[in-house]
Image (cartoon, rainbow, N blue to C red; front, side, top):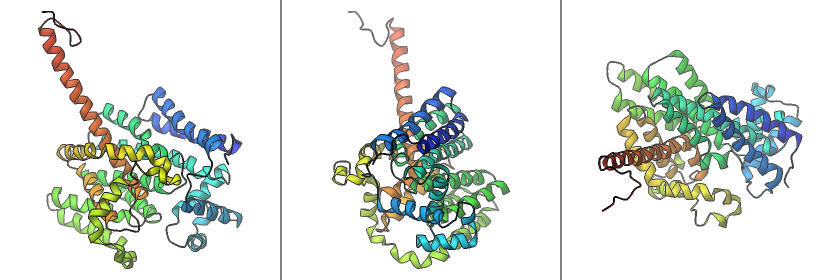
Length: 391
């Protein structure tokens, strides 16, 4: 079932590689940006040209592809489908208002042909955009340039990011990117109000409601809880009221869905959200076997992530928004049995990857500090740390 090295696959890979390189080049050296871009795009090309056999596919991904193909055959295109009549037709075909990823499949098929891999190629590009947004967040939070550069390299090659943007045609990479955009504008507005940032947030929230409607609710709830604790002065009440109104406006159309929340399921559900699929049994389900390394690393890095969250909580006030958001997200999904799983966890990958990286950065700093102290001690004794003192 592998596609081979088709013209469409090569064309899509080249387009994404060029765009991804220039996005990464904004923060990385030419050599680093080129190497990472070629690695990520090369994995997509290799998989679909020679290794794809349909094992790592699901029902949802085939549905996205089928409906997008049907819309194109009916004469719609990614532009005309945005009209009211087009959106109505897409809602009917999709059976819900979560239509953005169907449109994303239409766009991909229009650009790179009617193939399963077309939206996956675009999803690979989305990881560069997510990384760009998060690096801008770190810049706004005051992290040094070197820290931001190494984070971006880590994020683009992080195990979850790589597998989700290489193998399946699923909407979660687009959800992650839109959430990164939302959080970028939230961080900017938390520092200083601007019309431009507010308009940007409105656009990204609107797009997010068209793919996973409840995600903005989690963002506004986290932002509101942070504001209650951290915002001071005469504008505190107005800001919190505004966030509450935004939360209510998004919630009202979906108020009938609240019965899906089962608070009593939260403890077990939160554990399930954090550690599914278990790495020791992931191969029991062939469709999930590509998650072996991510599942293992998710388990290994759990306590380091918790520790990094504590470090981050004490380091930056606005950075606490991400910790609150992650905790709320885990609690929410843990309370809704119908949606808790590793796919839903992926939308928090920018925050999780940041905490993973921050722990590694901190640990390396501790090692370097101890090595420097050891080197200084040995120099005072006339030797180097790697030498044995003669007696």
